[in-house]
Image 1 (tube, rainbow, N blue to C red):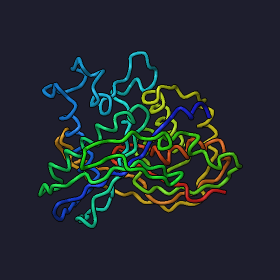
Image 2: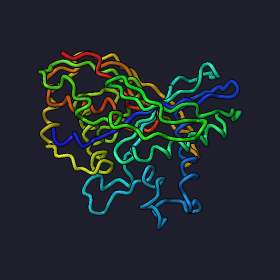
Image 3: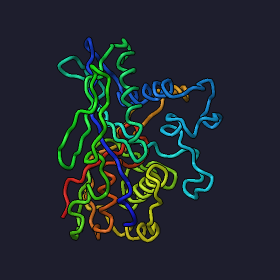
Image 4: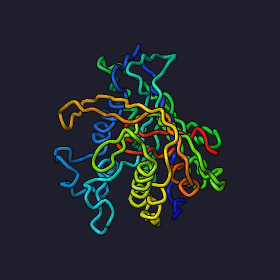
Length: 323
């Protein structure tokens, strides 16, 4: 299982309280993710006239460059065909098509930061404070960032880390920064059957095409690719794993029951200036085979998500049954 213990992450709950009734139609994840990117750049970037961070001499020291356009280093053999890496953050945002929020029902979402990105938490809080003041939705309803909590989902602990009155941010205690050891519960027992529920759409590509059948080896390929990239580029440690051997073993695990469907969302990309479709698998799949060796990756993936568009909250899954 390599050196998975070097991967660390933390989760936070943000609450935005609107001054008037706020109606969000469409995929709110796209609104938050898109608004966040622009606001984050306005706060961090001192050379916004440039089209790309690659043109900026300050990129290596810039929070925006690291969070959004982390460059692939020349000496890295990993992801050499990619221009940029997986973002070290995940938004967990309501995926209902229409929601109404007010003072008694504030807009709530979750943010997971991975590796070095944890140190940039104050930038995220400042950005959402600015977004709230600027207003959300078509009517630009002003909100207040009324609360930010650090969350430990293993122990069910919560700690308020942001004071809206004083605009101060408390240091996050170590018990809210999780790693492999935090989530590695019940991983030593023999497991031959497991049911996974895809809570938000999982966009899984295999042989260049999105698949609607989540074969176990496809799940593992995506997990290995994502976890290894996050470990190397955001946690400073290369994952020591025999990828070919693991994938070959994963190909022996079979689907014995499946109740899935394809769920589609649309979003407008301001960068590409066009409407885009984001779809993926939701529902439950039961796998059977020698599963014990894969459990560390499965359990880490619960927190780090899987597939494409994880920054929008896609690829969230749960292990609902194991025997």
